[in-house]
Image (cartoon, rainbow, N blue to C red; front, top):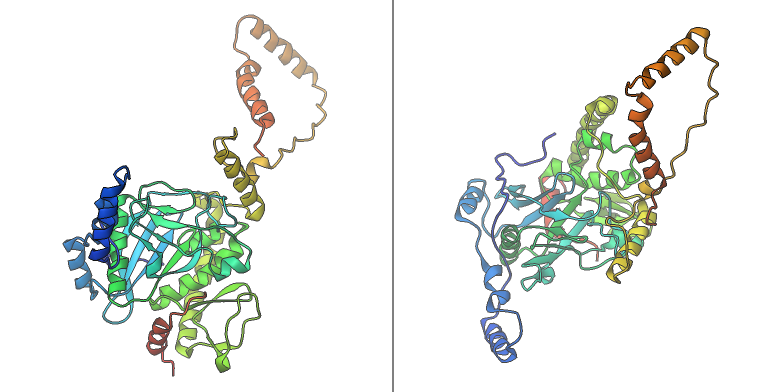
Length: 419
């Protein structure tokens, strides 16, 4: 189930972006910088890097797909694959992949962000507005992801200033190279100038394929990821960013509340509806997925691909956050953040009684000792370093406002026969 657009351009190191900038204001800033003298900022910090244009080759490729420079965008992020994708709306209203970038760095493990300081990069559905764009970022250029959203807040998750930025340095963010973030920023800037009010960021632990979901079937984050997969699936089917709401402490997608009802993150989900054609398309997609998922489960033991590390809930997040605070105070801490997997005690095997050797075994043992005395290399001696290493490892100390994309929804409703 390939989820990438046909003929998508994959770009490893790209260029530029920002929103409208007042030249009168720029003049005042320049004067202030001149007076300040010792300020390490420069005129470059105030505009040009945020105004760089998309490469003409990329613009031509977009036009060939029915996209314009200012058409709406959507961003998808995949942690395990290390990919950030920019999707753009075509003239038929559906989206296609415009560019794909290798993420330079993201911190933490697979799984959501739980608390301030846990070094986790967020997973979920987020809306980006013009005010979240930062042309004066200390990390070249950036935009704030909008964490925590309504889903995160209703689950008690905390944190702030989670970004997609440049400088290839991350502590809970998605970091790109400067050239890449200039281009990603340009996509957003141009879309805002074209009239898009906000764009959606979908952040996933991995591509939600049957094979990957089977690999992570036993992960503590599996239920959360299954909820994210619903939104992933709707985009796979429609190629239109889903309408996202939160109720019953879950994400819900492409639902219209009946009788003017509303969605409350912590309340019971209200009666709602979808176009019949969309429901039918979703059921068909899910049937195909279920079949492939069952097959993947059967073959998972022989696939050879192991799951990547994931965070084990609030408990581990709290440990990491404490480690981060102590590290920031200059205290001596372990090189890497603590993990609950490290803290799981090893259970020694119950010793079994050794059977009495048979007479011929006694003779063989005595013969073996004679060979050792004669200078042969004993297996016990060969195994000693490994035994010492195992003992050392076993005893080593261990550091302990909801989205309202009505325009996209009306388009989706029209595409799938809604009234």
